[in-house]
Length: 320
Image (cartoon, rainbow, N blue to C red; front, side, top):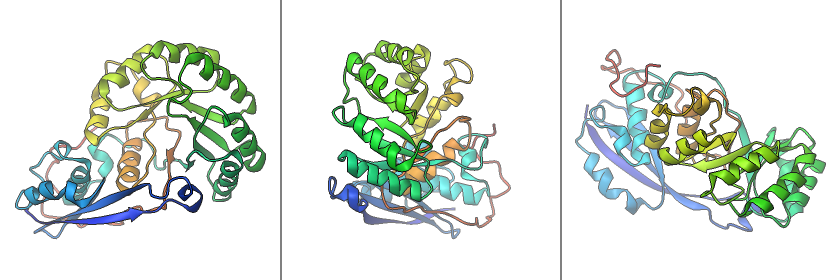
């Protein structure tokens, strides 16, 4: 099998109207379609312009997609090559990351920094659409009022993931806000409340509040340091597919901790949604939510086309 053509399509994904007021343009993406002489086509994407991927796209033409290491490529091509391999070997994509442990992955609503009444209105929309969790970008000066109004309009069963992107900065401020938020009973996670360079602060904060604490990390060394420090309840695991796979295979953390206390990143795009939820469906047994922050644009594949290599063992899929 040979790659015969790589097509790149620039797409601008608009934010929903309430978010557009604050972020008129979130980002551009480039969809990547890799086609083969066997009639298979794999899709992926990258954040950024088409020009950033043209050179690597050209280099793929003429290569055997099943002989390439998909994890040695940028994520756009990782996804496309795994897509082709899944079709060629007639196996689901989760096999590239581990054994399946769930059939569904819960998804949360998302909103950026907005005025409290605007965020509450978005919570009402999220609840009406059937969401039960809302990931919220938070500011220290109005987060308490925001959570109060969200509970008022969406109810006590509509939980909130508070993510200030380290804006609360120092332990005293984060601890004070956690104490003010905890009585509402709707805050499901406190993600990146403080600067990330002091895991001891996170350990102390975790002892001071019943709100689960999370860190958004990508590098395997940082992930394992946080797990060993026992300073978090959830891990928002970012980074490339290769980094995610590496973290999964690093078992120097306490047995089961990575699987039980890991959370994959919010999904802002088709590849993110597809790949992170595939990984969630494999080895991570406790997963709160994925998040959506743009208009849905999910690339799905309803059926696979069996190929002449379907009976061969896949060289880079997970068997357990």
